[in-house]
Image (cartoon, rainbow, N blue to C red; front, side, top):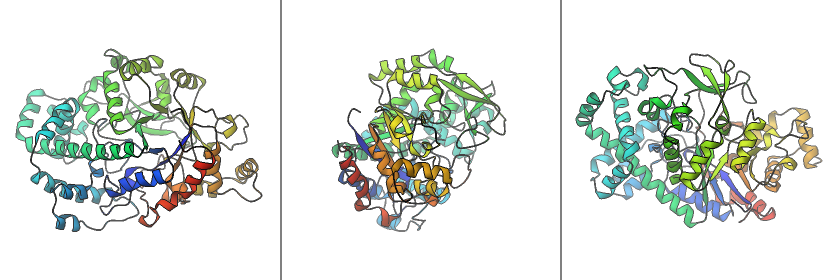
Length: 490
């Protein structure tokens, strides 16, 4: 990451498609073409792991598996695993948002049909053997969840909840067909994802992925490795994750994920974490580390708390963790998500590692001339955004800011009239940051209705999809122009 470059944030679920959710089909490849045509260097997306019905990629059921909803039925048809009438009879779901309940139900019907026609071949068996370390537990976990109608593993019968090996081995033999089905879905996901990644590489588009700092409470990771998390003997969480009150919420954010036993992870040189990072780098060239500040110190809240207000900062693993990762990987192709309550110690850790942090223009104009998000305070070793998936769209933000903040923005930009979304994007492109990433919603000038996620809001997140009529190369002409003007075409 030495040259100045630019890119676009767009999660794959937001692609237009006729199957109710974006996938790895033709529009994913069209997206790569659009980015190349617009002289972009990067495509950033959120984690690609399987989600629950809320759709949040930051609450995945696995740190290693892929989200089957991203599988393209059209590609299954091209492989001869689905009949034409089967994909043509797929019900019409909204083109503008993801209905996770119905998408999951309808896509699973197609996946079952495809699996029945699938002939287990050498490629499949080689995949299962290569991914054995995580795939066996994941497919078993999914099969048991199916038996319990999707209920969380903490509610399962004791033999399953506490992993009675004798019972699990018998269950495997009895339910081998279902276990193979979940292995099949991962086989197809990895195959389609690899094809897309190779196409991106061929077109010189670098992929920026994402690693959530925590795993979901209802995840195969927590079920398989309970010794790595703050659980009691019955697997009940002792403390859970969150952040104290900040820009996003006056009561903090109570995420509810289990916290790590970093001392336990240290014993084997952070083996699970290193495997997790390696897996993420199969999907991307660079990885954004979500909630980076937790590696220096994290907010721990007593299990059962209603809000995240009452908690304490606990020291994280710090620099020695990244030393171990560097020994394993040889380099650290990371971006630190260092937003929120950031201390001098967090900044020092990021600088010691030498990875870029994030700068968000929506946080810049509070009147403080030392504000770290103001363009003139930003260093080259950073990635600048107009906003992130957790922010309002820039159009929505401009509509809701105070008169004081508006005047500060206008004065900074030097406009006689009020600043527009285009002005804010220009400001990001002209900044010194080595990378500039703009959410597609901002490039399209969309309002708050197109927001991707509202922290603290329970429903309605992660549903936005790009209107098919807007998914055109010419709608990236603005960032193409800015990439050329501000030297971000390499």
